[in-house]
Image (cartoon, rainbow over all chains, first blue to last red; front, side, top):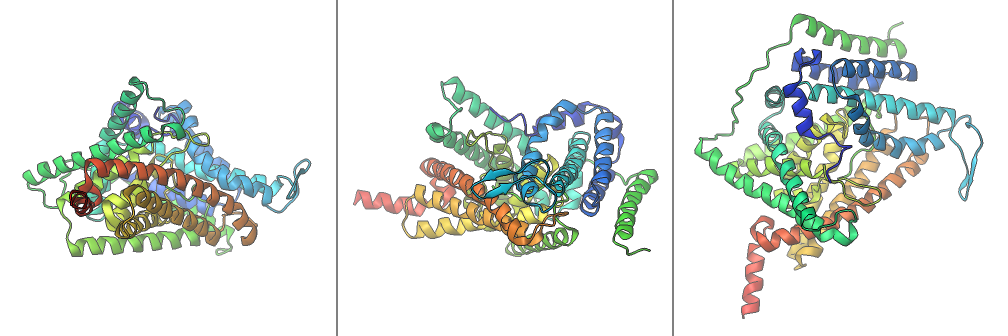
Length: 267
Length: 225
């Protein structure tokens, strides 16, 4: 009943904790830096061929890290839906040379243009490049390291909320899954929404209620342990080694250099 | 929960910087107000676990129009209030972006959209309850209104920003985005209805959670009288 096209945080964390690929040994700060450089790169780069090359490199990194390619294709569903929902109409509306014939509609002739198709591909490569790398980073960074980085990057009290959210996401997914299983075991039918809306509401309501009651118990245990606005992190993520720092710095320099050349800032 | 339905790199650099700045400003104000007013352990725990529940609920596939997902942002706003609701929106967006839903570069824009949903839903719910509406229509209306506000803001952000690499005039882009906003408004109605049922359920078992203890007490006394 839970989606298989949305990455399950439990599976993602299991890959991070139990596998041991080359990307597992890369410093978490380095991965965070590379995510930033990729975001900047896909925003600045304006050529489909370069974007396709960047995506190919990231995909190669993902596969080399020993991560599941089949699942990745299913996980592309949500980002692709995002792309199709806006870039789909744009592919038809974008001015340019039509590809093939035009489709007659009550609103006039409609056709995909070359520029529209290129735009669609560019948006696809841009999105999938970063999605693939963030998933790879999430699947190769241990729970304690993610918690440490969150605690260092976010201001208080956002860090406290984020750490608790991260900690309890796994528990809440299991609670939700148990509630769905229980409803199905009692003859509940979740395949149709409108006739089962109250069942859905009860499942979601119980999930929220369970979350709130868990929060109330948590408050008691936090206060009993002398919580003073600081969730202590026992892990430590050291600074990245020199060669990784150079890699991240080089990535940003390459992106900025590309931007400078293509916009004519540097002649 | 509406989202900027574009992937990474879809906005030009200036727009990316603009929405990130505005989103950071919003969260800065929220953090300042929370720190100034003081925050209790109870609120931290509620925000953290409500964020986890919101993130977990996204895993459930709702079989409408081929399958939709929701984060119950309106419900989170009604339960946690506008300040914590905005923080939860940020945190859920961070985790969602890490799993390929949303975009790292659009965190600012998406946080603005979802925080607006939580804030509007909270104030609309309080207003409608103050006008003596029943729990179900008040929460359904408030959540639908909040989610609709988020959907419209999402469309406005895309139109203002433009799409990286597109030569389409703003007027034509508005037409393309209008369809997406319309679809999101439809989802807002479904999610609003579901939120109404959830709040009705919560009010029946824990009226204190939705701030209805006084009202239910008054209703009970009216019945008794």
